[in-house]
Amino acid sequence: MLVGQLASGAFSATPRGMTKLTTHVLDTSAGVPAAGVKIFLQKDGQCLAQTCTNQDGRCDHPLLENFASGTYELMFMIGEYFDARGIDSPFLREIIIRCDLTAGQSYHVPLLTSPWAYSTYRGS
Image 1 (spheres, rainbow, N blue to C red):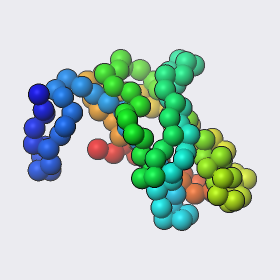
Image 2: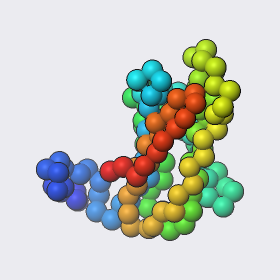
Image 3: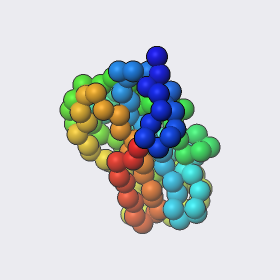
Image 4: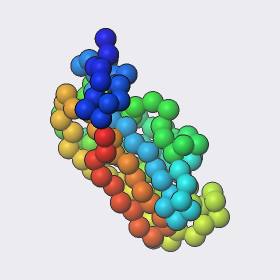
């Protein structure tokens, strides 16, 4: 079953009861999606998932579905991304975002980054 129409007027394709964690990465220094960024998801020191962003700077699948409440870490290997493009990134190598997730809720955690800075927020 589908959740149905959201307040925004869009339709959700997420089955009822399914929650997920998603992300995407934007390279703000070039104004483009950051394709090829390696991402690791960890909880309590254990790697739960690893993936790489596609040409749209997104992951092809949710990082996590139907998860337990707890503290999770997203690790973005951003230094490797800039190195592969021949861009000097002496400041940022790995970006770790540690967040508390609550079971039953979905989360979208975007990363906006350049070789010198980054920003994140809880998206929709």
